[in-house]
Structure formats: structure tokens, C-alpha cells
Amino acid sequence: MDKRAFSGMVLHFAVGSALMLAAFGLSDLVKTYLHPQALFDVFGAFTIIYLPHGVAVLLAWFYGWMAVPIILPASLLAVYLLRGAEAFEPMLLALIVFKAIAAPLAFDLFRLGGIDARSPSQGLNWRVLFLIGLVQSMFSNQARFWMGCCGDLSANQLLLAFAGSVIGDMVGLVVVMTAAMLFFRALRQG
Image (tube, rainbow, N blue to C red):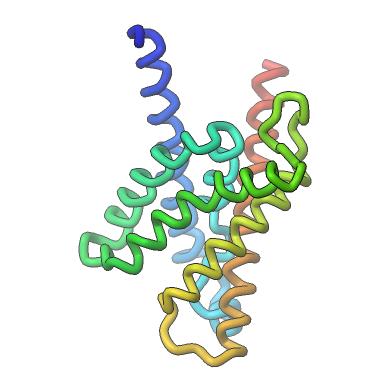
């Protein structure tokens, strides 16, 4: 591999990782300072705008399975920076790995179903990306609740927590997709 190709890979890794870290940090700020307490009372512990989900979906759309080596270390570092080393329990580590794998897996499942969102001939279809993001969110959150990470919840509490998590993921995806659209529109005009 020549030096130029290697530096390009490092740049892609650095930018993708920075986007993931920024998404985690911004989501934590939103959860801490802007999240209405009434929503915590209804849905339990969730983030109303979970930006890492949106970044992971777009990275998986752009890089496919090569997004996993970008998402995984950045997610681990973000958890360490935001929650400390004591947060690294086996269940959380398994969940981080599963969430990193879930985004490219959702794209592959859609491709097997006849919708190849990553195909150059397909073009960019925001609705398909949103649908893939919804499926990935449901995979990730289902795994989270199967692992029992939210404690002992009644069926109603579990349903509300699941719905709140999916809503937060999808709002985060819409925010990230809108920001990406505005960014690329500004690049074209500038």
C-alpha cells in the first residue's frame, strides 16, 4: 500500500471517529441539559436525540462493513470519556459491539431483500436510509433489552422504554441526515 492510500485511510478513520465522538458528546449534553424531565417520567432513561445512531447509519452507508473499525473504537472511547472505566461491564461491551455491527448488517439484510442502498446505481435515497436506520434501531434496542440492561421492568415500562429509545434513535438520525444534507449543499455552493 502506498503512502497516499494509507494517509487517506487514516484520514477517513480520524474523521469518522471524530464524528462518532462528537455525536456521543452532543447527545450527552442534550440528555443532561435539554431533555425534558417529563419524558424521563414517561419513557424512562433514554436520549431524545441520540446522534450516534445517525452517525453510525451514515458511516455504514458510506463504508459498509469497514465502518465497524471506525464505530467500535470511537464508541468505546466515548463510553470511557463520558462514564469512566467502571462502566465497562461485559454486558455493555457486548452491546457496544452489537451496535457497531448492527448498522452494516441492516444494510446487508436490505440488500438481500432487493434494496441495495449502497449501490452506486441506486443513488442516495433518504427514505431508504431512514428505513434502514429504523430497522437497525429496532435490532440494537431489542438486543439491549434482551440483555437486561435496563433492570427489572414491567411489560408496559419495557414497551415505553423501547419506544423511547427507538424515537431517540430516529430523531438523532433525522438530525444527522439533515446536517449532512446542509453540509454537502454548502460545499456544492461554496
